[in-house]
Length: 330
Image 1 (spheres, rainbow, N blue to C red):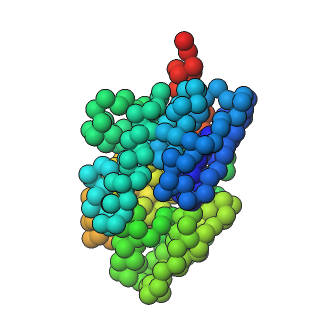
Image 2 (cartoon, rainbow, N blue to C red; image 1 turned 90 degrees about the horizontal axis):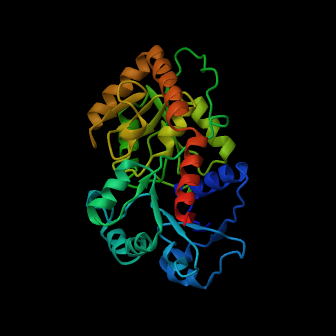
């Protein structure tokens, strides 16, 4: 499994998939390559697969250089960067980079793939819309339900609502709305934010918003457990690990009905989903959650139940094993 380390959710996916496959007795070799290869993925064609390999599985950015190795190539495309629906949430420079580098690499990888997987039906549909001949298989991501599990709720009457945000500070992730909602709820809520795996630093933040920097896995789980609401204001999302991880820890999710988030969170049951950019709606629902601990508890329990029934580890691993079998069969 060759992968360009991007300090993003795709790295988490590779680690979780490799761990799950190894538990099932599959020998997995994961080769990590530096960020420099993101701009020049073609250079990876010099890398040779292990002699014992039966399949090469790579992410869309860096899969195509391995198409000539004589082995079946499985590709996972986490979100299609050339989707027109993504365009409003990136800068002109980022758009050009996607057009010239990463998007072009993804197209080449999808054409070279013997099998293509996506983490959601949303991503699969965006790919088919742009590339009608491609036939992706949607395999939802998963979470370790033993590691990400609930703990007893905090007992501290009068404590402000604690909102937890995981993600980088981009417009796509909605960090500007995290700041705006924190300003509106100063005095009634506190916001704890980790910059995902990148750990960005931002100045001029409201006093009730704290950036933790990069968290270890154990610290991340503890942050989910100690919050009241997981805040996922993404405007465009290929899957949304934060929503699922929060649900697994028994927390309600507040965010937008965007992309794959609707495939994870049931609006009104395991959280509240508003139309994209509806900051007033977010504010209203946040106040509702703050005022009603029993509502938070019910939604958290429903989220945990959904994580257990829809997104268990073994279901995802089974799906990938079936995909591998399909390309190995004569």
